[in-house]
Image (cartoon, rainbow, N blue to C red; front, side):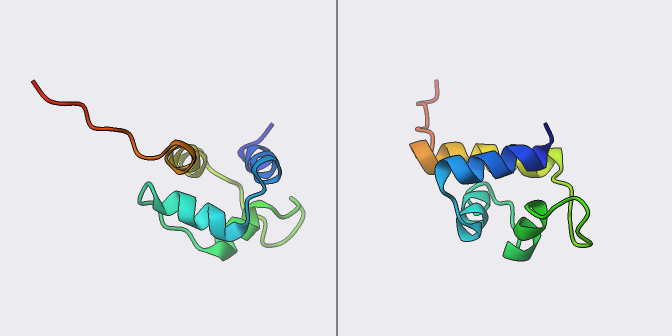
Length: 78
């Protein structure tokens, strides 16, 4: 299973739109355009298909945690 497949499955399971992907990635200071997001969901033989890298998937998953649970509470320092 590729990173693109993971994004596609999360998109369907969570009913996310392209704008949701952009907003979730902004939560972790990772800026990407809607056009680039669309390229991840194209078929592999499409000329504008783009392979989703590990960095994009990692940042999306971290942003998704913040989106679903909220930001992590800061622990008091010693």
